[in-house]
Length: 91
Image (cartoon, rainbow, N blue to C red; front, side, top):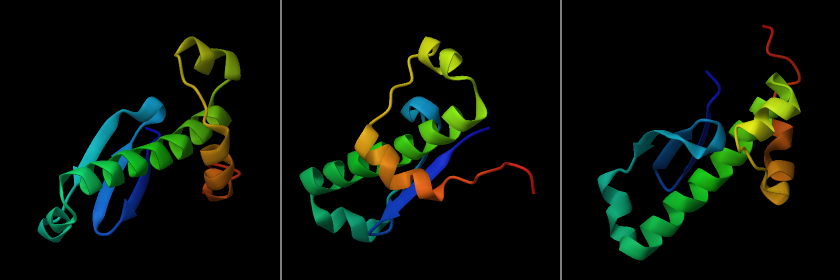
């Protein structure tokens, strides 16, 4: 399964391609940020992790298949996370 993670200020998210949320962790200290700031942080982390997961999916599957699934790419975020994507999935 292809997933990607992002974290900041103790808040952690894990998503699959297309942004499907697999895990969200919000520690008690992050609640001090306030509702609006916390929501903004979570959405930013989801966007970042989604760009990374989509990039990993793009490298694993033919592009035509991904388009049929409705996966879209944020070019700015994809460029930012592209260096974190392994060149090969073989270990």
